[in-house]
Image (cartoon, rainbow, N blue to C red):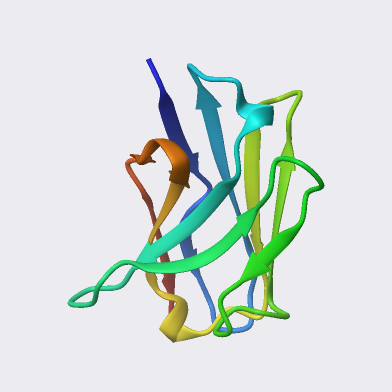
Length: 114
């Protein structure tokens, strides 16, 4: 059974940092591109970042470029999202996503507020 489980969300002040993790199971993790999405209250789910399975090439939404870093550990079947210089507009539920299989995690809440 394919499963994605996110962790690491929480409340952080503006300018702070958080590191999200997504633990994968049930598939050959090293063969797939992985991605993060987010959904703020009242808004559609939006793309945040992705990392390829071949050469760890990364891609970011313009809104997070230069602040967020996506990495993966194939041995541990985990993908991370390091979020720095957080802003109130980064507040959302963050989802781990396996694009080619259409699989989503349950999400983890990130709240940026003073």
